[in-house]
Length: 602
Image 1 (cartoon, rainbow, N blue to C red):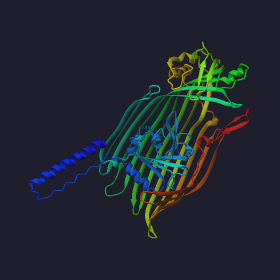
Image 2 (cartoon, one colour):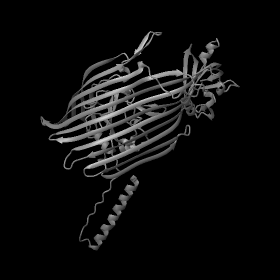
Image 3 (cartoon, one colour):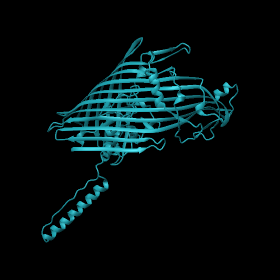
Image 4 (tube, helix red, strand yellow):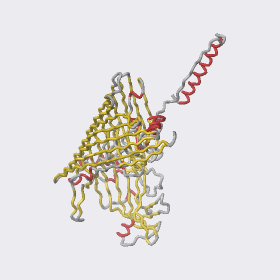
């Protein structure tokens, strides 16, 4: 029900009660007084509760409620978090992907779902937020000041995604979201669908949810290789690209919770599967005017405009970026005397795969002119009589790039908390133990080259002109990249990436943690002090051996909160953290280049 409708209904109730009161008063000749109280509430909005939680928090945290997230036109949590002050988004082709706090590296931010840390989809450390749809969320907590009960890798910040609890709504509930739209550039379709249902009784609660989003778009860009020579601009190379992109994400999951009667205890199991796919078609031409001048035995003239021979290369692609997360948590909250215990067991599997086959044509030549007077709309124009699709290429080949990483994480966590009084002050003591056992397998980015199996990419050109807000001065048209990929798969018997030994990843990592913290409550505010200890034991196996190491870090922290008034707080924090190497950096393998006399590896 909309706010207007609810308020209008409340007004009708008040009017009806007023009429009833008048009738009763007249029939009783005012000898009896009947009081009627009409109560109306606005639309449910948990944002007020989120603000109150932020005000009462023991650290500097921003909290975004589910009701507020639902009003954003966001398909994933990266977009939603980008609205929080102090958080920045890195976008890929216009869509939010990574989050950082105050400009710090992405790996300095950790992510958790219902308090359980999720390994990063890329390199085991870098969390991707575009794989999590907004529908799964009950509340987002973006901690900008770290406390001892948070992971030590949270150097810049710690983001906790709280999923929907069926006991949040009494009885049966159903929420759904359906949206359709269109991208102006490229006439791409947008669809959005989510549904969440729940039921809660006196002791049992169940919730289920599903989400599917799809977005088609065309992204084009122009890249340059420019330099200054005697205060004049030299145009070495102009790169013109147009991408057809289709991005899809889906999520499924639910929660079962049992709460015994007459107790504060609860037992639950939750599961979430989320998958993101990025289907990408590339159409790219590179015009190398510096290389053309060198081939012609002349010098490249300086200036924002010019005409000359250009070496032309072309790359086409229909590739896939894919990542997924499957996380399962079994938990129990128990009140044992003066102690409140939280026990959790979690299994999470994250996977990240990239596969990019690129038919690559090079050593083409064409006479062309360039104009970068308007740097926001650079132009390349072929000489009269030359068509872009008639350029002959001296060499054509197939490049195949790929990477893969799979991480299995098994976590155990126990937190205990109790209140106590000391020196007339109310205090809280909290401590915890945890263990995270991770196994990572895969390989870093690998590239290989081969033939096109007799297939001519020029046979797949279409007459569909590029959709662009730039000037399509080269008269670029799209290729049927999907059919080209299918024919290459058929002719080759299946396109694959064979990783070399230098890029393989095989790591066992065990992280054992313990912490203790005390919250002292004063009339003027609170002081939270404590320490966290993290011990890391890892083994990295490679083709010629393995490497093992163990190290322990002690991470103290202090959070100060001062109530300057009912509306103003002063917060200060001092914390320590640690950053472990990525799995790619930790791999026990290396490659030797005898020509360059270099060794590179983990």
